[in-house]
Length: 203
Image 1: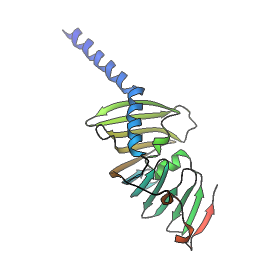
Image 2: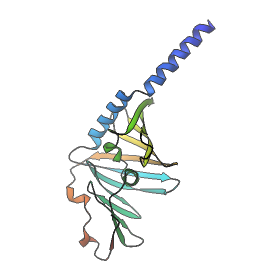
Image 3: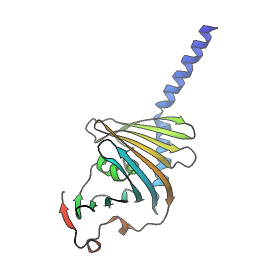
Image 4: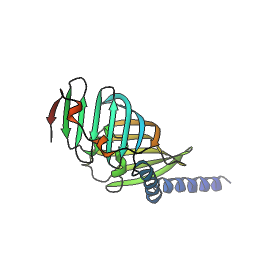
């Protein structure tokens, strides 16, 4: 009897382990999530970010494909898919850069939609009504080393994103996600709206 119970437990654990490393299911979840988040018209959401290095911040974000526009009480960020403009209210400065994956992730929690298809080992588990997708960088030189993405199993809308950069973790909580039509001009910094700001090109 005891032997039968042990065999059943081992079989169950083996099944769980296999499911957790199921890259096909993980990719399917991410594909569906990316299709919703990265729709052609655009989308918006509220976010809260916390991490050992960055402290906490909260605000709103508009996204369209790989482009995003984020606002917090301290900063405003525009990203058109290549160039990022970061306006710091405290210094009245605009920093212009070509950001890394990790830098984009700090201000755009949906940056994973352009990252997961190459360079990451995928796994997935279920937790209540959610999928938890695990992404691990195959190249140790990648700025984003690891990601845990919690996605609603019915709507495929992300709820939390936990990101490892170096040895530090950052957690992003998302809410009030909605699709909407957003013009491309939303994702480009307009100097005339900040006439007194100093523009610093860091590229």
